[in-house]
Image 1: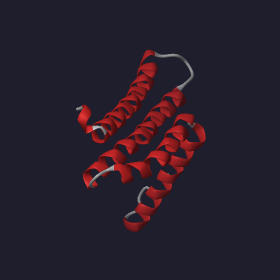
Image 2: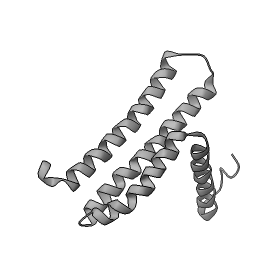
Image 3: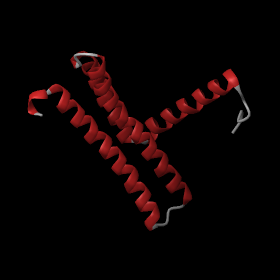
Length: 123
């Protein structure tokens, strides 16, 4: 990679460019990421409106942000596994399944967070 030895502001600029390229690649190649971003864009304003205080707003919004974050990690795992080769291997399947499980847990965490904050009487 170009600029690996960069320091200071140049390193930050380079890192930002790599991050934006990662977002673009995931958006372009992963339907699940696009769907999760759509849900995020719909629910994030609600999270900021429905939270009664800063902590609740942070929990509602943060739990939503964890879902696409985990999808980025899962997509990176899948890309590395697929780059290694098309043949079936137990460890490749396990890595992909574990990445998928991480996304699933992020979704469960978001749902649980929203339920506990928005419906406190159900606790």
